Structures are given as structure tokens and as C-alpha cells.
Image (cartoon, rainbow, N blue to C red; front, side, top):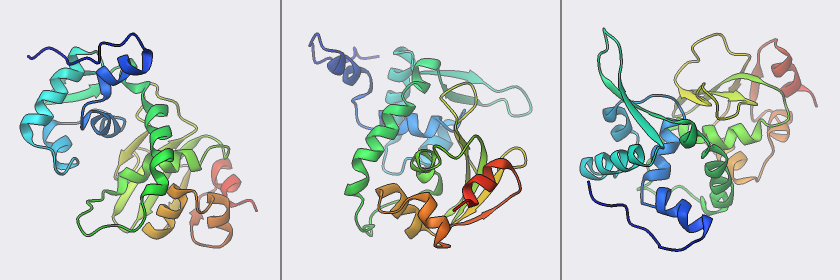
Length: 212
């Protein structure tokens, strides 16, 4: 394993970039915030990354204490990668970076890949203040769920597909509306009030979302 490159600056920002500033590292963190992932799953949801680069980044992240690799018990018996506590602490960093970059989204380019769950972290921020609970989200590209009010603890803050248990609320919206929410052009309350987001469920969280 090659030695980690360093800016050699006695500065906390420089030290942080020593660890996570390489291309693809923070996007790997984004994927692992959904919980343990197999190498093949990571590669599928990081279009454009080569197998060599992905393997190298995962080794570096394990060395730096951001991820661990473990073997799942039978019948799966496959290796998965997951974030350590130190790695999960990057959640607010990614959210802040996403908020800063939201105005740069603009129109989707023909070459742009998209996955439904890439909208999970911006939606977590949009859900702040409504309460806690699991929210199932349906977009044109697919479904995912988020844990509203969650912090980067032991449980994943979001996941692909259906929630493992009955969600507290369900949101249905199109990608255009979701992009507007991510860019800050529209608040979640406004989107619900104007019927651009449909809310279903009887929990306190779903009722809070439906309040004018």
C-alpha cells in the first residue's frame, strides 16, 4: 500500500483533506451512510469509478479508520464495507457540502447518472424540524427511505428500497420537485401545501408534515 499523500500543513482543514480529499472518497462515504455495502454494490452505485481506484480508496479509508471490512454470516458469507464511528461523523460534512453545491445542479446533463437514493441526504435536511421517524420516499427513479431526525449513530441514516419496518410517513414526488427541494428553490412545507408532494400515514410525523 502506497503511503498517504499529505499537504504537510499544520492545519485541521489540510489534515482533513489528507484523509478525505481524494477523488471518490466522500462519495464512498455517501454510499456507506446507507449501511454495509458489498464491493459490487458500491461499484454499481459509483458510475465512472474504476475497479482499481475503488479498491485503492477502500484500502486507504480502512487504513485511516473511516471504514471496516467484515464477512457476513452464512448464508450470505460475503464481505461488506461499513463506516466506523469516525466515518459516520462525516454526515454533516456531506450535508453541508451538498447544500453548498445545490445551486450548481442546474439542468440535468445527458451524461449525468442519477440514483434515487442520492436525494436522501438533501431530503434529510428538508425534513428537519418535523419530528423523528422513518420516511419512505418514492421518486420516478425508485424508492428509498430516510430516518428523519437521525444522527450518524449505529443505524444507517437512509437506505435503498423499502424500509425494513413500516414507515412513519410516506412521501411521493417527482424528480423535478425533489431537485427544487435540494436546490432550496422550494421548502418541503410549500411543496406539500401546493400538492407537489403527497404525504400519507397516520403517525405524529406524517400529521406534522401535513400541517399547513
